[in-house]
Amino acid sequence: MSRINKNVVLALLTLTSSAFLLFQLYYYKHYLSTRNGAGLSKSKGSRIGFDSTQWRAVKKFIMLTSNQNVPVFLIDPLILELINKNFEQVKNTSQGSISQCTFFCVPRDFTAFALQYHLWKNEEGWFRIAENMGFQCLKIESKDPRLDGIDSLSGTEIPLHYICKLAAHAIHLVVFHERSGNYLWHGHLRLKEHIDRKFVPFRKLQFGRYPGAFDRPELQQVTVDGLEVLIPKDPMHFVEEVPHSRFIECRYKEARAFFQKPRPGCQVYPLLFGFCCRKFLSVDRGRQYLDDNTVEAMAFRKSAKELLQLAAKTLNKLGVPFWLSSGTCLGWYRQCNIIPYSKDVDLGIFIQDYKSDIILAFQDAGLPLKHKFGKVEDSLELSFQGKDDVKLDIFFFYEETDHMWNGGTQAKTGKKFKYLFPKFTLCWTEFVDMKVHVPCETLEYIEANYGKTWKIPVKTWDWKRSPPNVQPNGIWPISEWDEVIQLY
Image (tube, rainbow, N blue to C red; front, side, top):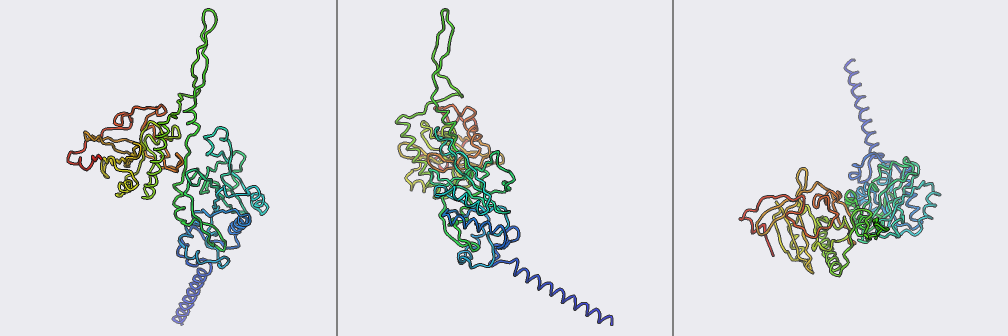
């Protein structure tokens, strides 16, 4: 009898376990899995359905922008990544043909869209309609940096960000503005004193911690979770731009101050019978200089700008990132322009980004090699001859544990030199109507190369002695001179 009872108990346990297992499989199939779910299952958190406030907020926002002909496009990195991984599924989905929400319903606090401001025709009307639909909207404005170089317009404010909240979910509308370098720029989301800091969790926003610059994306229309939306045609290119999009402006006010004409004043001296007034030039804030607008200076700046544009086009085609270095970087930071007496254009490139076909690419672009010093492993430097006797110098930077450096070589002696810089990262800026990189830590970079007196123009410069960060670095062995000292 005891043996029978044990068999019965064992059978009951087996049946119970099987039933529980079947229930788990059914639950997973009908509630947790998604069509082609392999790419989506890696998302953080579980999904929520079409009845959620999150999906309704996105749907209402898309309906609002569609009805008002506001051409917004999706820039939310998480959703764009999911769309890219499952693009065949998205491409083959028609409007209203899906049964579950798999992209817009990934749990998060915000969904990010963007808008090119020059295409927005009815901003105020859209704002009112959004509030009538139940959205609580916050508008972030600030001064237009494009006008900072113009005294009479420098206070003009432009919209930078909209945050529209519906229940517990918020739409972040990033306002992109066109810049003269044919790229898109968005501003810093800086909260003014009257703004409620608890309106949304601002710290979780993915755009607005700093100004950003992006290539102008080509857009395509797709259906995502039953909603027609515009997305970048190359979603991953946009996603990859986001963490490297930080933008810093040229210091227009300081540049104006640098070139501001001193105003005449009068210094009074007592004499035996009355007073004497001797005229002098007063300087309100430090030393000031007159800009060089001679024919020669303007011609050089024109040629240097064209050379920089050609160099940028060549390097961008190769996929080699670069930044303004040495005198070109100093000109951008100090006076927002090319220094007319510098006589060359200076660029920096990390040695890990070097490509073996870089010399051939520049020669094909019409820039013959003038000299090649060093080698990839040590102190590489390239110089190309542009038109009108303007030279392009490219310095390759090497990274050590606590600093970076680039090398220099004296052709007639084989002496090597090393220029030390504190570690730096790259930011975008605008220079001579171009979007280019500069060191984010610009002041430290310039002080390393030119010292604390970088504000004072120096027309006589010895590359072996003048920089405060230069140090001897040995001598090239004579047996290597044919390789490391090449003059053309």
